[in-house]
Amino acid sequence: MVLASAALDSGYALLRLRAFRDSTYDLVIFDQAVRSYSRFGAPVAIVKGVHNGFGPGFSVLGDHFSPILAVLAPLYWIHDGPGTLLVAQGVLFALAIVPVWRFTERRLGAGAAYCAAAAYALSWPVAEALAFDFHEVAFVPLLSAVMIERYDAGRRGRAALAAFLLLLVKEDMGLLLAGFGLYLLTRRGERRAGLAYVAAGAVATAVCSKVAIAAFGGDNDYYWAYTSLGRDLPHAALHVLTHPWDAVAELGTPPAKLAMMGLLVVPLLLLPLASPLTLVVLPPLAERMLADRFANWWAPHYHYNAFIVAALVLAAVDGAARLRGNRWLRDRVRREGGLPARVLGPRWVPAACLLAAAVLTVPFFAFGDLADPAMYRRNARASAAAAAAAKVPDGALVEVANGVGPGLTARTRVLLWDWQPRNAPWVVADVLRPTFPFPSVAEQQRRVALLTASGYREVFHRDGYVVLHRPGRDPW
Image (cartoon, rainbow, N blue to C red; front, side, top):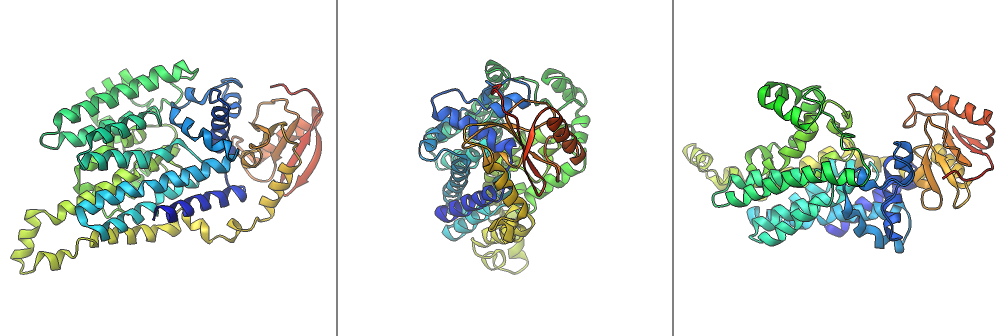
């Protein structure tokens, strides 16, 4: 199952890369950072630093504290390019099958374990994460599932090691630890450990967010998204304590947040709601749902929901097991004249239903792209993008449209083509379709006109892609 899932995930991601469906923001950022690690340097991403005004020597540790990315650096000694990250992500997602299987097998048996593991592998949060380039989230399903499963198996030291490694994935992963601590507080005899996880998670989140990021040249307030609650964390916390209903209202503003939260549990048949394990995901989920900026945080697309999907699948399994063992439910079945085993079905039935629900969601999310012929054979636009990229010589500094950067980052120094002139010798622009960060195609066309007026010469133009060149010194 792990091999099949890794092949599916990696193959899907590589098909997207070949079809020019990936983006400079964010795949090139991680590619440049890991390449820097592989050359025994700081994780510098010039594309991130220049576009966001931090400078060309900016370390991505000042954006998100993700030192665990360094473990991928040796893979770049084998193959230096973004495809390496996509394959690594697919394998990491697939490896979470092992702890999901073990956890489920203990509660519902081997048959249910296969179904639950497959439901996780086909889940829409995993698919959507694969469809949005590469991110540090690749490590989270595996580590979070190991933390929960190993603790459940009585291997507290291994669970603690997985928890520590989670803290190296992203500055806010302490919230997952805090959520796990809340879950342990519901278990008799585990409250001391629960308090330890809550405290460790809270302290780690504060230190990584307010100390580590600033130490690496980042802005602590860059991702502050709670302006309706306060201008900073102390003011927001005071506002929530004195006006709790404002926080409750924020959870449903806009209503898309409620739809998002429903989408997380409905395909899991609402079973997570029957398990205290769902407490694990509440702090990181609240971090997103209380925000009033960054609408991507409460959208079903992107990678954000992959941070919590493994924990939710385990909560669904635990919820199913609890419902089967619920004395009130079994007594009611007996009173109505049925046998519990006959009415409730074999132990594998809930997990089989989870798998069926996951399969039903496939066409509506990213894995549905596998039915698109353009995934396997480049269409005219993708072919034009490949031809435009081929015009740029190896080693050149190039400002590139968001969708073309992944095709160039392995052999050139990529900057994002944006509204600010960077004076790179080469520019690959798109004048046909909207591309980040421009507000409109008209603005993109005006930008190209300004470049040609300033001395750039057009050397390629096809299907909306324009390649411009101006001989001169590399400014970076």
